[in-house]
Image 1 (tube, rainbow, N blue to C red):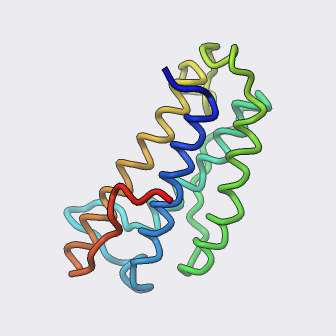
Image 2: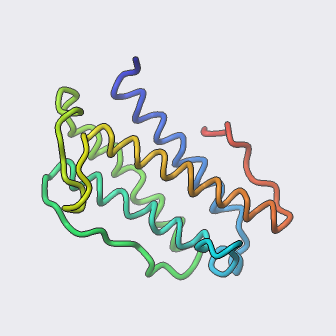
Image 3: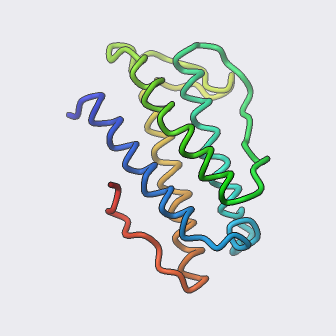
Amino acid sequence: MITKDELLQHWLGHRRLTRKTIEKFPEKELFEFSIGGMRTFSNLAGELLALTGALKQVVTKQVEPYGHNAALTTKLEILKQWDEETPMISTYFDQIAEDSLHDTFMLFGQYEGTILSHIMYFIDNEIHHRAQGFVYLRALGIEPPFFWDRF
């Protein structure tokens, strides 16, 4: 239905929109604000940053336990790491042979699925967490970026 490159471009569009969402947060609220016991958006962004390492596992077949990126303590650090890791998604993604997308892989040594199902999970997870960020921004009286603005 879509090409491998179209799937990558779709994912990268979501990355650009999530970055815009991070930028909208005031520094303090990025690290402290939450609703209903949900994690802060800085914590959610750290999880999304960890998915670059997950994609690397798919490519290298070197399985490692899940490692959440919680050490970042400023918005600038999160954005810097975001900008460093986003191009790595393309680098790793380009190394995946299209005919291997339906191969089975045990992500983090515990989640079995096809390579494609893992990639789709990475994208879905980002959309889910960004939506939480949109709710936080609205609760703070801040207009989130338009959800369709992925450029």
